[in-house]
Length: 365
Image (tube, helix red, strand yellow):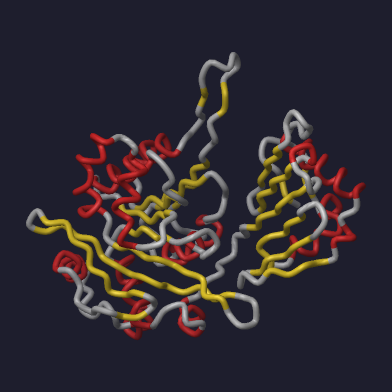
């Protein structure tokens, strides 16, 4: 059963009716109905049409009504967008009064299952053994990661994979508005706190807003909880400033952002900070406290599907007052094996002498 947020009603197999088999299928990530067609997307980003006749007008009315009741929100022309979520599902529905194609919905699945495995990533050509070893040794060395790419490239899934290599005694705090990380479930026994961010809402008289816990507040709260790592599902706005300030205290972290080149990460952070004076002051902090930039991409395959892979990998550092970026991987190909001095020193302090040696990591595990 799936319990929707803010409600006491359980959405079970009967509630999802003919869609339940897709909810149970771990290979399916999205179930979309556009008012006429039913589309399924699998873990390989292959999109196929399903039998839309099962989404009858009666089923659609009953299903959306149950979701609406579960979250105690109206769904009508005055309230044409309905959003609900459980631990593993996110449902968005759009009322027919604001579309020309009829009532539509999207069910996004984020189950608490590990979708990436080190050996499988290598076999699928996600990256080479050497690059994977380097990234895992960066986790071992406790470096800060920014993972970037377009929507659907698997940024959060790869971040979840990397976080699995954090030592169990290191306290991890995850911050997200939609439950996707599932750190406590994926890695039981590890020290973890999961913080759920609430969206801003208008107050009772409409004159302002009330925020139970926004991203900035969540990051500041984390510092009082003695974290070793902060996992921010996505840096989107002014919370980027708080995240950098958090990194400056010695707390490590992994986050994701939307950009199409690792070389754009500094500018993307400066744009998110929004305040020009803060941005000018913190430009050096970006190179001081962000260590690793990773760009993920999708490659279209002849079978109509796609393959995810690491397109770019870089290191940021600031030495002798100079901000630098070293691009090791570009277009999926290793261009440089020379690590910046600051990165080498961190590796040495962690007693890592062969950062590209995957076999040595396997022996340790």
